[in-house]
Length: 336
Image 1 (cartoon, one colour):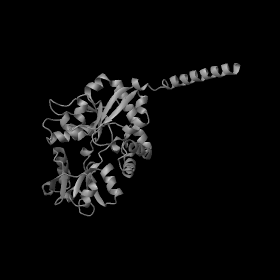
Image 2 (cartoon, one colour):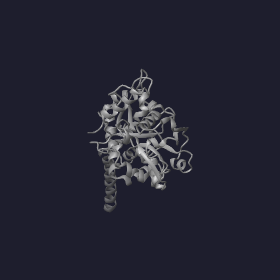
Image 3 (cartoon, rainbow, N blue to C red):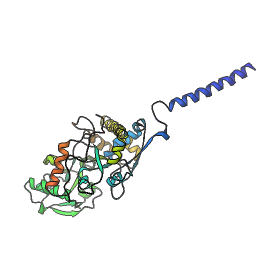
Image 4 (spheres, rainbow, N blue to C red):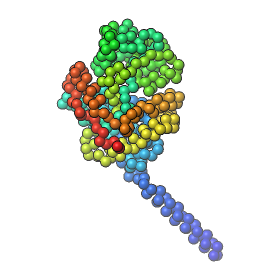
């Protein structure tokens, strides 16, 4: 009888202990899931290595530690900027060149760039090796796949002229490129604007010999910020501490990707299994040196570089109204 009573008491103690352990785990610095503040983050495109820090922060629990539950969504047809400006998403991905028209005029979108994803512009023109397009002037007499964007074409014209070339001799064809390697191999186009971290790395993996020049190497005015993290002005004003908490967690994600590119690539591929693992790993290794580069901390936006690009846009009248300088960006919410 005593043995039976002892067994019952022991079982009761174990149940109480287990319950106590369960309670402890919910108060160890992390909020209960129902108490997490919900954040919607809208991408600019399908997931890729520009976004790795976001997926790392989610997988590693950095957002949860900050008291946040982050939902990652695809952009609508009218872009991440409109979704963030309307308050349907609290944060998103955009680009300084894309934001030029959004910041200009009386109907400017109420959004602000709060972090740079990559410290320098890694875009440029790629072409098949040995066909003379290793410099901008060499594009004369060759085809270029264009999106017909005023800023895009003005950028290209600027670098061709600076190299002593005649931009009118470049054959502009509407871009239908979905795979840069295939487009170059099949000779459907001679030159393409790419972001080297993805398309350039892909040409290397597929052993396609190419020539390439980066815009930022030709003229510092083109060393603008692309991509950037944006947020709505009203949201930032009303929720400064949440914005800081989000960006601190996101910073940890990108810092992890800088230090651990292969593990970060695994995390991205785990979240988006349809991605090409080999390409993701190679791209991640390339970007590990680009996310922060020489900046003091990840996400920093340099005012002089920001203004230089918009000043060039204003001088060339590439937007209907002038883009105001010293606006549209802040480092205030980044951990420093």
